[in-house]
Image (cartoon, rainbow, N blue to C red; front, side, top):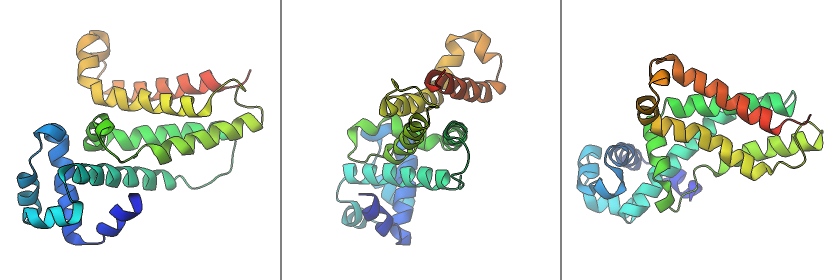
Length: 201
């Protein structure tokens, strides 16, 4: 699916369609999004949209997959594989949060992603799993930690907060009073929580 979407995005028209779709789905959700509105904003007719993506579901998958590809490309910029796995885990978690915090449309799409065939989180989870498993091999990460579960939980701490930030701040006034520093404090606390939970003693 990812390769297929990347191939389609070599077309400027398909790229315009996906860009318009990401915004429409983020604003209105899958059920409320209008295909004719996406086509209009992309400057194409609906026939071309369906030629590229076949259905509204296919278009949603493409929008989600393209966002996931951007997410993974941003993480790839972290570069060096040197250093302790736990240090690289910290850097990866911080980079994931920072990327998602500046891509609100992707966070919204991800919270709807259960209806999609795309798996945009898979590369990000795999990246964390590899670091956790490497840490276990070196005795730095607890042996009883399930790397897949811990990786998924770490991402949930980030995506759930970013997706629910207005509700959280409204429900806990002391947190809301700390804006705009709250988001940075949440990132630091979430990363610390993950690291303390997995580190071998």
